[in-house]
Image 1 (cartoon, rainbow, N blue to C red):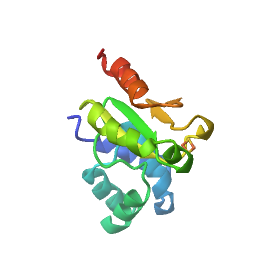
Image 2 (tube, rainbow, N blue to C red; image 1 turned 180 degrees about the vertical axis):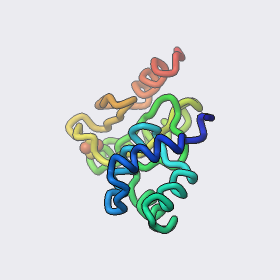
Image 3 (cartoon, rainbow, N blue to C red; image 1 turned 90 degrees about the horizontal axis):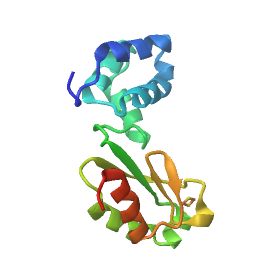
Amino acid sequence: MSANSIDKASVSDIVDRFGSRPEMLVQILQSIVQVHGWISEDVIRQLASDLNLSRADVHGVVEYYHDFRTSPPGKHIVKVCQAEACQAMGSRELTSHAEQAVGKDTTLEDVYCLGNCACAPAVMVNGRTHGRVDAERFDTLIGALEGRD
Ligand code: FES
């Protein structure tokens, strides 16, 4: 299996765990993302068939929820908060900086409030939240992550 494909049997196991019930589509998709990190076009096709839904139905749900990534994630995931308190403290500028600063092994995503508003702007690096992140601090965090200086 390549890094760009998701094992069909594993998806079938997840569908079975939810009793192959179409009304459990969101939970099934969440489980697939937990295990595999993303939802491929093949998975959408398989879910439509296994749950007796149209591909448009499955696509609609995948597109609605921001967390259902449709391409394989990088080795590291960095989220920059785009909600109000962080925006007021410069998260847009930080995002522009981040887009230039991250390497190809890192997936950069938006997130809407990390519950760390008092220490805006906030960033999450591989599941860990950091507050008061400016461009310099961002570079330090990313440098440590990607083994750069
Ligand atoms: S608004 Fe960014 S952590 Fe709450």
